[in-house]
Length: 152
Ligand code: RB5
Image (cartoon, rainbow, N blue to C red; front, side, top):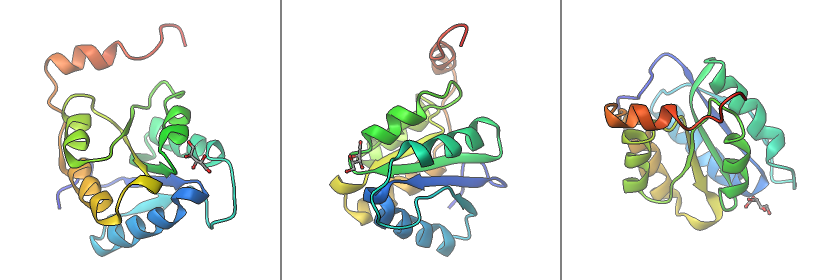
């Protein structure tokens, strides 16, 4: 698989609801010899997704990691948290077409998965597409440049 930014580690994070899927994705990344940095959580004990999403978001914003993969039960809480960061474009994706468009049109830099509502096999297919689809650029450049809130 060709990944969108070889040479950087993928930032990966979840809460307890996403922990099982995170482990599956990490196993897959290892099988593909794709490096990642795990920002937690590290077990199934109940926890708060922002505690893991913020450090992962900062690592992507600062360019230490790229891209990110994040998951919680629905994907919404962790996506909301990630998208509070000006440099983050986190896309909640539940099928491969949405994942492809999140890269082509939105230059998404974090893939978010709804762990309680997706089969692991589908999740891995989404990861594959997300990691191998380039940004289309063109008219989409102008649009993503307008996403950040001015002055923040
Ligand atoms: C945890 O129960 C759940 O609320 C969380 O994983 C996520 O779905 C929140 O958006």
